[in-house]
Image (tube, rainbow, N blue to C red; front, top):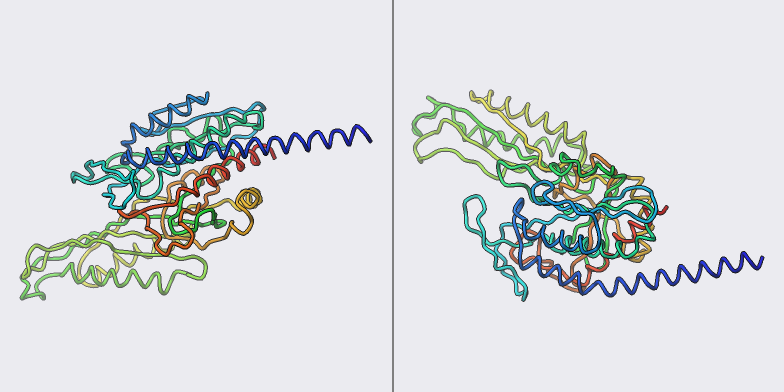
Length: 423
């Protein structure tokens, strides 16, 4: 009995000491994470051009004794940390690219970088918080490297370029990383990621089981009519009229055929090009738009019906039309079992009341491609100052987040790693 009591007291003291040490390490790393974030924010780089960003990441990982591979999917960095004991393999992912946005907020570390995007001069800005994602994962890497003795298994740190999409004519992002084997050697058992949000209060975490963010398709519709004088429409076939009818028809798929009580869906035509002069009915028109879906079966239905409707409407008005789809992201689909397994960790670290469910969003995230290969869990990290009525939207020149929430990101991914690998 004395031996049992001694062991109980001993392990209790050890666990308390370990947690105290971890807390001290977390507190010591917060200033570093904020400093890294500001440096990346001030020096942003566009998709597939994150050369200096990658150098800084690789240098940090190497300084921690982590095995590093660079040049993955052009500019990606992958770090591998092996724990003291064998076990499963967990992957943690952060995206590293910035956007062609000219910053106009009042931050003392605002970006002044100017570059070229699609042959146009533009400012460059971390207008979606990827700078915070990099800094958080660098902090997690430092925390875990200092606590290898607590790790049973392997951690793979994935710093991914081109989440916002590679430049036209180039491959990139999660798809290319997967193609180049980032989830192999060693084979990943599960992957985790987070996204800062300027609309969620700081130190709050939000998540959704299953479909959390939408599959994103870009579609192009080409309509062929017959050119004629604008005063004699009966002698031609008007592709602009056909385009209008197609746009109107596509919306009935959403309002009358998609079961919106299951999941949301959106069809948006964002651009239409046709004609050169006010008194000429042109020969052709082109429409470009996006389809957003959160359910795989609904996605198949909508794509089939969009194809049928486009071709049939054009034919009904004497013209021809084709539609082509290009996939930008799949559904960001959180594995049910993985969410159930790791939810207690999030609640323990952030506080139960600070971990909340959310409704799906129709934004897209190429983390979804990783989730098609291995079970994945993706969640939002709050970055909005409490009481602030302005949220500084993502992808805008005014984007801004509260840096006091970054430490929670480091803590959650660190403890997720410990709990996933050790349980």
